[in-house]
Length: 275
Length: 315
Image 1 (tube, chains in turn green, orange):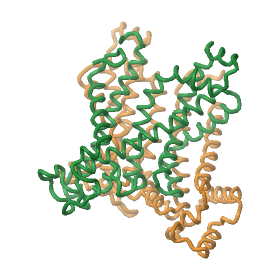
Image 2 (cartoon, rainbow over the protein chains, first blue to last red):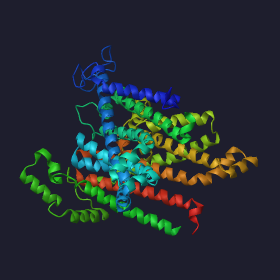
Image 3 (cartoon, chains in turn green, blue):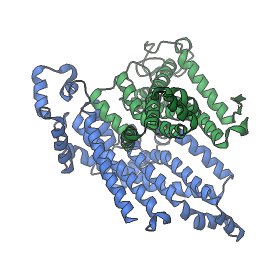
Image 4 (cartoon, each protein chain N blue to C red):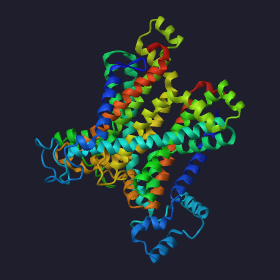
């Protein structure tokens, strides 16, 4: 199997398969799920049977259905946040590289500062004041995460800005928005794509951790992180219930990492060899 | 070299000061103000006015910032909004517990990681190397609570070797503490060993490619001696910095692990107080975590300067 002229490694194929299955389940959740995510179908913690493969949860809802709807919430949220943080990070990073001078200095120092603090702790401070609504979560994590995108976008763009065709565009009198979108972006896509995978993983784990701590996605929406939290007490009774959503999180992260690993090794080997 | 270290230390202090501003501003970005955020739906004009006065919200933000900062420097973090207790009294025992857990994990993880990394580098490409590689790649990608619940399910519940709850208190004897905190420690170790071990292996192998190692091979030295005596000293700087970075990660990683094992540490306290909107406690915890994080990064910086002969020489 080949993508863009590059041979896929075995681990990358496994990774792509994992991602594909997760995406299909997330997009078609209402069609795939046997039951609704909030309907109470029987006693709490009913044992698995032919209708409910993993049994019922703490309120008597079908665990399989909640896992499927949870895919939608967990993956969708992580994608939205990563996309937003890339928009912020790329625009500011490119703008810093193009304009240079004090704009670059001010943005870079601010980012250094935000990066010098643990993201989780800073998110806690903000959530303690603003609460855990979805918009708050999305904006907070996107802004905090965009600092890492900024670093990469800026360093990639600094290399491109010094090339002749950018100079030519400047001399034509193009504004910085044109230079960012038409000259730099098309040439920065490749390194930014691998970074998107890494950042997605990070965001996905981050939201899951927040939800697990009870500070992320709020009930009744199903989400893998908060499912682990809801089912955690059952572990002491020998049930594996919290392991299912936690395993779902782990498997998707491993899948994405496999693909990112392959993309990075492809870059480091040079473009020509695999083709 | 002395100048470089002083420079880095000053930079660390500036960063910490700036971080304190950020933590403070984090609570100032509200559409309304802190009092209405805390009370939310139960706000009446009277209790709103009273809380504003309690919090000193009648003073300008900059005055409150410096009052808070200098209070914090003297160990006075104000009072908890949830139960009115002194924040420092609330935090101190929990901070000790968190430090205990983090130190416990570090003492086990660092020698283990460096040892495994060196062993993998010595037997590069062998079965042991590949096995360690695959296992560590898995533990890196997996969230802490997944490992934690696996351990609870199989080691604590099924085998019954260790307790699944690490409910230590201040009068728990040291030996019992080690026993109760064993599974939380093991979880943290699994998470950070992978990263440190891979980095140790990679930096040793990077040095192994240099010409003077080839010379050592041609002299007929054993692989073990080459790795330990010739390659390791020059690979020390990246290893030290990745160790320090992982210890900094440990400070944050404890938050989740403490919650899983109901371990009474600073992280668990912070999580509880975030959902209660108890801003003074959250700010104090945030400041302590940020300080620990910045300090460890500073130590990493200084140690890598000390271990690099080129930086050690005055220019």
